[in-house]
Length: 256
Image: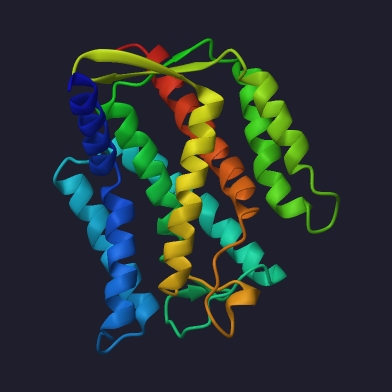
């Protein structure tokens, strides 16, 4: 029974950490089923995301420091979206006034929601990292993973080499987290895989409700290829490395 209670509490803390992604998915579903007046759907989604972000900070569900991290992810994600849409990897076929180079601004919030989840889960579960590698290794690795999303269109795709490098670099790194006062630990590489897999499930839900559209979904929706898990896995790694690095830097700063 204690194990079940702990599992339920862990799930509850995870659900609370996913408030922002849940609102995005609910908005996608709502605007798909019920057309809203006056503005195109993409613009309504942008307005909803803005109000949600304001509400998260106003209610103190997110701190100002976390908002800075989330804003960084919004910009990083938007830059990636603009490039990928330009290369034809996917598209946003619906109308919208707040679009940049064919990319609606609400798309950046989908990346920001991943950062929101990481920041909130980190705080709620009192996450600690054991045997975290040096910044000299972590930062170039995160940069290489992010750049590969761009360069593989013109050069060879080295995602599997990068995935192997991640396993080597973080082989001895563990995540320690707390549930109801009890401490647990998990290999960091396993947490990457789990988060990436659940984001892939979320991607299927998002494309079903028309968040964006892959070329093979133009005529009718079809499940996102399982191979996309590797892309989300690498994106999660980049997100986690940035959040963890900023947490480490802040932890070393003098108080007051």
